[in-house]
Image 1: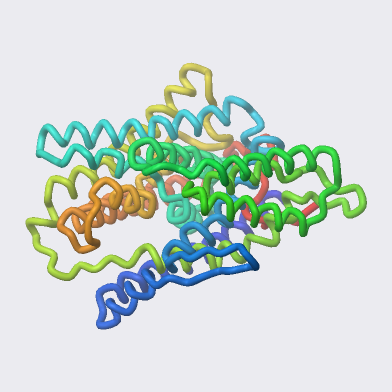
Image 2: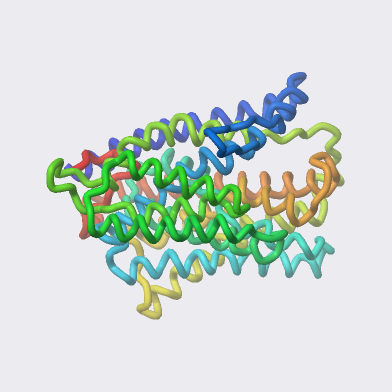
Length: 414
């Protein structure tokens, strides 16, 4: 039964990955078509949301990044909470491994980039760009090649990418933040604390959870902090214990309801908004500029080396454990996949090299990020596909000793 649920989930995730890939391809085509100006104008257009005295005015791009993607991070946070309490990550050693791998996955790209600044003269301020893993694209690629792989690998990737992303957010706050409005942020923290206490003492109805998340999200937006951070924090307070009257877990129920929206609306729309890169006026000299090479190699070489080395070291020192049922070849495939840095890397690039979207530095940042991400994605897909076939051919391959939650609500709630 557990195997069937896993395969059903991977089919669903592969289908959503197809939608994500098609949306990204469509964005690149539109950005390099006669409709390019309309596409970028649409992304920069402002739209207002007003409910009584509460008013927010953001661009379409920001509504998608800070609005819809908050739902994605909420669901990711819910899954990680389940795995920590009941699933693969309930073993502290298996939780330590992806956390340490994420740290290695940030140190590796930084080391490669900084080494190349001395060798080929890449601009020093670009070193944070290759540090982040794009969760959405990495999970989509894993969905394509996930058949035959242990589900623990996906949990390893998911946890690693979340820690990596939170590290990138902290880095942005330290290096590039112009200041956070602390008053609404403190209110959001207070609401999270009240929600955590209420969840332990009372049976909180679903509408109150929805309103609570909306309030925390609004306060985070006006504070100037990324909503991904508080979305994961809100997931941590959602109860995992089933309600007495319905025998349903609020956590599983939320994942079950939000999964289709995440898979077929949030992520494809996000890809369409963020993958549109214009290659107009590109020269060969610019395509192989020092900044392009340093970013691309930081993602492709630095990520795989840092993640794999940290995971192996954690296992060798007995402070961590390899994902259940996974081989080191499969872990290496996931390490390669962590080099897909697309969105957060592009965002950090804008902060590191401020200027017009068509400035030489911005074009080079996009080329480096896209090049490194494509190299990592192709290499990871090949390695994981081969590793998956090897496992499929071996019926005695070790299965996880715990039953993981099968993705974003693929498992029937209980």
